[in-house]
Image 1 (cartoon, rainbow, N blue to C red):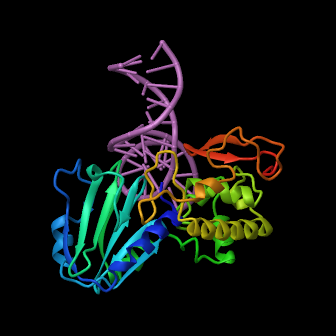
Image 2 (image 1 turned 60 degrees about the horizontal axis):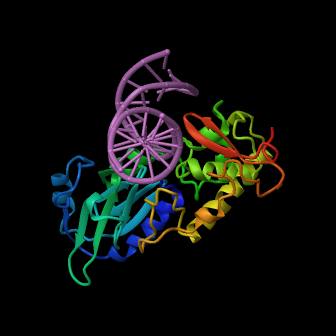
Length: 277
DNA sequence: CATATGTCCTGAGAGC
DNA sequence: TGCTCTCAGGACATAT
């Protein structure tokens, strides 16, 4: 479940290919089932092979490999991984992007469940096609005012609203629970009822948690699918306050056990004592 | 239009 | 031991 910190870690790991020319974009032999590649592998290869990588950027939970004209948008979704190093196993590598010249560099897009998506977007259409259409402001860029304005337009529970990538991009199920706990906000609170004060706390908690999690190179959960750019576990899973810690003592009050509830068919973890409405 | 639900997928773990 | 069932959740598609 790569979220912003995990995807940012992937982005940083790909930086060595900036300035390098793409030799080939292929699918590995004997791979399992093909993932979604839009519009097609053939088209992507035709447009990007021979081009120089000008930058690696990130929008929410997507990584963009950019040439002069194009951006190859990688969406890891549940178990996707984009890396220059080794991958957990060779059997789930879905795409190779090989660079020309020395040293040999090859981006491997690995994805155990195969729900990831690779999509070619013209660079001048990123704003219209991605940002306006599908994604709100990135969680690391959104201002406190924008954060408040965009969240308080919906009646949905604040936890559910945080997961809506059109409101803001980058927060997923894990970090949503974590930031609500730090900000001491009830995950069931209708987002429109968020006070200015609560919104400021939540925005600050979000920035703090995401930036710290980036320093730890993300969270590797029990499924072990997420790896940092060296194919090692991340470190932030050891810092989780509530996520996947049902029945464990709340680290803030140390009096109440963490509770798990389900909102919009996703687990939410929180402390009913610290996060009461 | 806003919101809710169904769907994809694989591997781990539970239960019998 | 080996089978079946359930669950994990991002984001898209479809339904209400």
